[in-house]
Amino acid sequence: MPLNDEKQCVNEQSDVESSPFSEGMASLSDFECSRQSFTSDFSSKSSSPDCEQQGAWLGATSPPSGVMFDDVMAAAKSLSDMTLAHEIAVNENFQLKQNAVPENSLPGQVKRVVHQAFWDVVKADLSADPPQYEYAIRLFEEIREILLSFLAPGTNSLHNQICEVLDIDLIRQQAEHNAVDIQGLANYVITTMGKMCAPVRDDDIRELKATTNIVEMLRQIFRVLDLMRMDMTNFVIRTVRPHIQNHLVEYERNKFQEILEGTPNALSQTTEWLKESIDEEFLSETAAPGTEQSSPPSLSPLLVLNNCYLKLLRWDYQMKVLPETLVTDGTRLQELTEKLNQLKMIACLSLITNNMVGAVTEGLPELASRLKRISAVLLEGMNKETFNLKEALDSIGVQTCAEVNKALEERGSPTLNTEVQANLIGQFSSLEKKDNPVCTLMDKRIQVYMRSLLCLSSTHKSLPPVPLGLDVIQQELEVLGCQFTNIVNLNKQVYGPIYANIFRKLLLRDEAVGKTDASLPTN
Image 1 (spheres, rainbow, N blue to C red):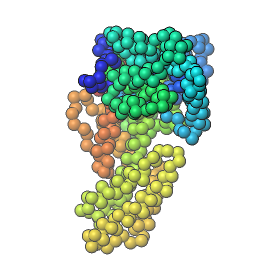
Image 2: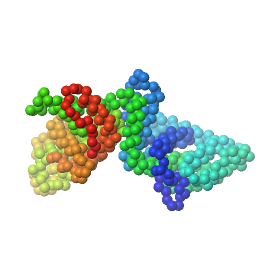
Image 3: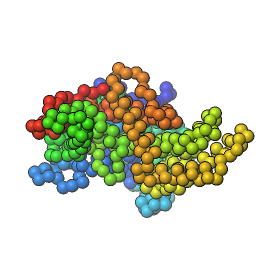
Image 4: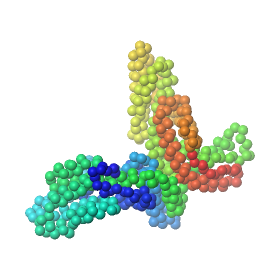
């Protein structure tokens, strides 16, 4: 959390990078597990890790015989820590956010009613004659603990001041004599919050100072404290990110090893994932023309592993469980695959348009860009179950015909006849069918491009050329390709030894298998 010069650096974490990695992660875990105030609206969730994916292979079935419940829970904890560390390291935009409950939902209505009931009690107590301060004192006690939790080691002066002003025993004695200054205590809290908060909370502090109703002021104090707590946690995340990045490979590998030791058969999905590609490669080797059936095939584990990674670009993330070694990147891979599917469809539409009306639209580069934008907008969200792809393709066909005719009219050329327009719309609509030849062709070319990226050495600086027909999505394809190779290369670094062991077991168990190098060099 960046702080300005005017603010007291009470939350400065000067010793974070020098502290052990486990301590940094423990501080985050402690935050997530901290008890939530009955009076606050605080809740948090990470922006990227998919907890359902994490549990898919740890808790989807009953534990194997001989596995204790504590072992399963320890493995789940290790996976949770590993996922959080991975997300912090690879996602520069990772931060915790408040989980806002929809107001019109049942949980939202219950939360609102309960909170309002509590604050109504506080208001009634403070308005009574004589006033009742018990609830207000409890609130200040909780506020004091929250403020103290924000302080970094060494801030003794402010720590002592907070404890002195918010001395709960003294406040109770004052309350017994009806001499407690609730407004004064609230003003002190707001002033102290102003010293601690990030600049982004300055407006909230000003609003607090302008509030005259004491009950509403207390309520809003807790709201702002929750925001400050989130700011503090995200500041810690940004601070420890370089340290996590420097130790990520070793940390993930060690954590995953803990999971393997506590969870038998924890690599079942990964083994099946690798075995499927090995079997396909054996089949292609033996079926190749001119292959001697008597000679044992020799496979490259790195080639097979790249084929495994390419399968992730066609993965059904709704129905199939990911290999255990890829759980931490499941969300990223799914989003990347969905974007790639949309780009593939745009490339298909462009190819059909060029084949059918390219001759009459030649020399109109702005038209191609406009058609691409229209397709991208109408295909937004095409991977959702509720998305009607055929309807979207029909709309794109109608819009394409209208845009082409408009461009032709502006150039003084004859417009497309009815038959050509109907044929164009029909070809667009057919892209929705399974095994459409245009989609199959574009999918193969995308796979070829992605494979060429995976085969690049780490010293290779330039990207390979984009296959024919994909030039309309070249820029987006290059970006997604780089993201994909980054995920793959990190995964190879972390889990390369595990993949090598699986390959040895799968490739060497059959005596007919020829000499195979089971090492897995990373890019």
